Length: 376
Image (cartoon, rainbow, N blue to C red; front, side):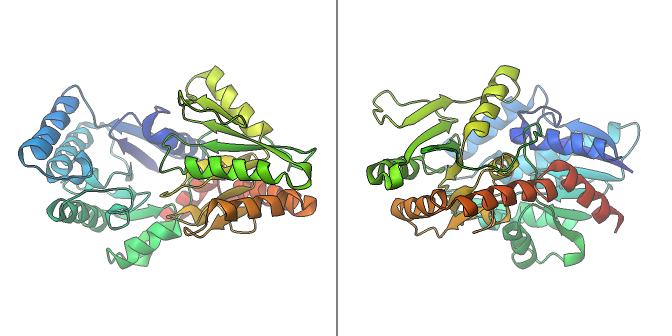
């Protein structure tokens, strides 16, 4: 069976969609598929996108989420897809479009598209997207609906998205499969953890201060060290953000952005995961949360909010804690203290996290489930 992975940027590039498309591509190859790729962007794309967004934002005064959710964008990507498919020497059985509703919606090619959204427009509007006017929101919603209707198969990474595709877009269950994403890092063998002393290392990985809840995480660490329960001391390491010039909190270390494409920086990121005891991410909005799959690979219990698709990746009270979105930093403190002072529960949770990675949150498991779904 041949599959073509289509993306706006090179699907084999680890920078495309945070490495998700490249991991899909590699996993499909490892699991017996013949795999081709198509990159939609060309030299003209950047100028067309800039011109279109200037026209919509500055001249028409429209509030749009992004280029892909506009009719200009979807028609442009549909035409690019049609041309590239037409020029292929050998057609594929399926054409995978990760986060590619705008590729599929207006494409005219008579091929079998597979839509792989991490969320739907109905979920994203007023969640990730803000300030979108009604006409633009209706357009984004229509693009998703057309893409889902046109797709031969739809693969969803979370129950959150699965239910939206069913309920908001009326797609039949026979077209759908729920298959969680894997970790976008090289696999390592990790032994389930035990706490060896009173120094607790907490890791946070994220590149958006507000959405990833960094202020909450900082308050959590401050309160943990103020309590000093049972003599524990906590250090928070933040990967993905630089230290602000006026920052003075002594129990926090900023590592900045670490590029997984750079062997040295990847090694530094892996070292931070290895030395961590807990993973804390009070995220305000999250579609899938691949970072949680990475934490599971390193057998790290996770503390986060129950929002978006998070509960697919963090099993509450099994591989971590998904607190209600109304929870405060004090609630996080209580959960963390409860876990670190219970050695048996901590070890069991660490073990369960790694087991969940081994069985579900890895790309080979994803590819194996994809194979069964396409053959069904």
